[in-house]
Length: 398
Image (cartoon, rainbow, N blue to C red; front, side, top):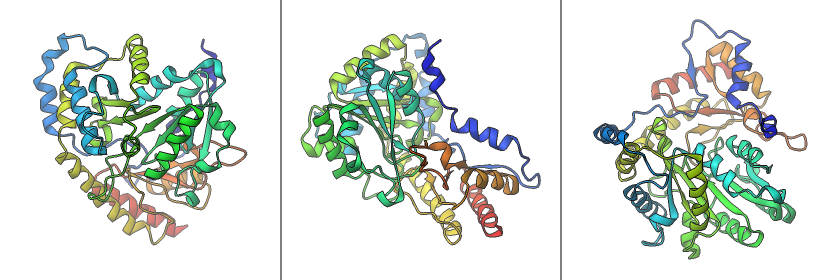
């Protein structure tokens, strides 16, 4: 048995089930879950139609590299979305379809980490737990950078020592952040690229929430935007991860992509060929339809804006909570034991949220998620409003 499996921590939702399984919720109130970040908005009908129209492709073995039409559609979307000059992204070299970002983030780490180097995989803290598990199973050591309010919920990259950067093999970024919703500024991305060049590490930018933002006039920058501004046409040491799950409300399609450094993607393709991960052709054709349309994405953002506006109006007077830069999470400071807050809220109001400490790691006796909770505004508007009203009643009654 792989002894690295013993290093894996329980997933946050396992811990949450254990916390809530010992208590009984208020039977007079129906359950409302703001815990799991699973989009609940309706999936686009035209994508479902494209999938159904191509079910005959189930008789075809898909290739790991994907069909050229999908890679071209993804490259074209990246050019439009992140102002990448036309022709910089060679769809055959710089783009690879994947079965959602979770699978890709894990496999990518196994590809990039050199086990012989005693390397670090550096990530934000709190973080998406796949970064940590992928590091352990690749033979690397996770290194956590706290995301605190005084730094806009982004890591203080200036405080990272040269020794950490020297040992770093992969720097994971998540922008907008999960769970904080914080965006990494474009200038910071440029500084990180310079650090990657100096210390020879790979930047893996998890941007699966990038299409959930509030101002239609100013879409948030990404790592490809920074490459474009720097004239970095080879995207050296830079790789981005995107998904249709949040952007298009298609979590069950399991469709995303990785784009960037051609040399890294060539090795990643080799790994994936052995790994046996290939997207079914009918899914690829449906994905082309999704990446080629923005109208449904704008409509999706409108729905989230409505929910944030309504929920924040209810909660802001009684909680330390702010609108995030992007994503669909709230990250309020509950000023107390976060696990107890979540348990008591569940018992009293039958509303489920996640303790912030479950999404973070203790480093030198400090957990940056302590005292905070994550609320996913994925339920329909009426449910989010009802949940907010119950949370307000719970907070004020304490």
